[in-house]
Each structure stands twice: as structure tokens, then as C-alpha cells.
Image (cartoon, rainbow, N blue to C red; front, side):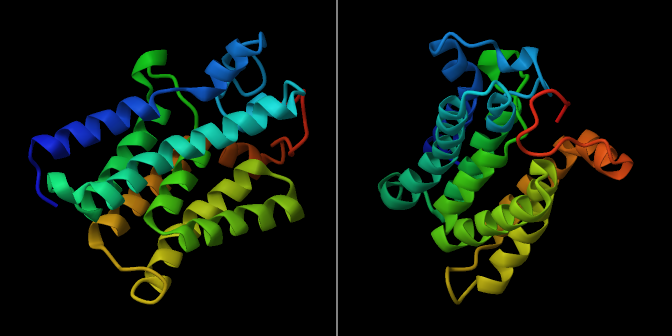
Length: 212
């Protein structure tokens, strides 16, 4: 990966795209309460679901995932003409992820980044995103903890990338580092959830009153 002006523009643009907090935007558009004012106060799909509006939660989930996927997909498919390679695409994905965590448009108070990270993984390798998403779903179905599902998926994502690298998708050192960085940040953002899981006070999926 070579750092030059197009690379810098791509990374900054990806961060700005990631800074669009769709939990807040969708809620405002539908006349709902700001998701930062109830539940876990986390601007993400899981907390929006606590409002009882499943459509808003689904829209938030999809839009947050798309904003992680778009930079990676665009750069991988059309970036070569500006000297942008797959390494830049992976870094741009992390930039979008960081934008979600620390959005410049919303006082740097963002969500935990699960959906956006999933979008980035799909952009890097669709089968990788599918495997990681399936892991999240399996844990969610059996244990009904969104946070636990996210933590397990974050742990396995780099492992899946290494296992499938060179077989199901090309193996890139930059992409591997990008995935590890996202996984570590996801775990860090879930530190309060980890404490509640250990204490047995974490709320399950579908809960509207308890904190996430």
C-alpha cells in the first residue's frame, strides 16, 4: 500500500462516510427518540430495537453495514486507476469503522461498530463476512446475548481470514492487520458488556427495559 494523495482522500472520505450515525439519522427521520437517550444509549441497531420499531432497527443495521462495505468494494473494483490497491481498501474499511465509533458529525459519540465491521468484512471477502455473520447468528440464537455474539464473532473473524486465506480469498497482510484492529476495538467497546456478562446482569435480545 502506497500513501499518496488519492490514498489520503479515500481514507478521509471513508471516515466521513462512517461518521454518518444512521441510528440517529433514521430515528430522527421517523420522529423517534434519539437512541443516545434510552437503553444502553448506544447509537446502534440493537439499541434502536429497544424502541420497539423493528423496521427502524433493520434500516439502521443495513445502513451501518453498507457504509462499511461501500469504501472497500469501490476501491477494490475501481481504485486501480488512481493507484489504490486492496491494502488501501482494507485501511479505508477501518477508517469507516472508526468513523462509526467516533463520528465527527455527532460529537465523536458513536456506536460499537458491529454492523459496520461486518460490512467491511463482506467488502474484503464475501465468504468471510458470511462466516463471521453466521457465527454471530448462531451464538445469538442459542444464548440471546447480542454482546456475546459480537465478542465471539470478533474473536473468530481474524482466524477465519487466516484459515480461508489463499483458498477462499487472497491473503493480505494489510487486510489481516485491519481485521485484527477492528476485532480488538470491538472487544474494547464491549468492555462494559463483558463486565455485565460476568456479573450475570447483561440483558438479552428483545429486552426493552434493561441496559445493553
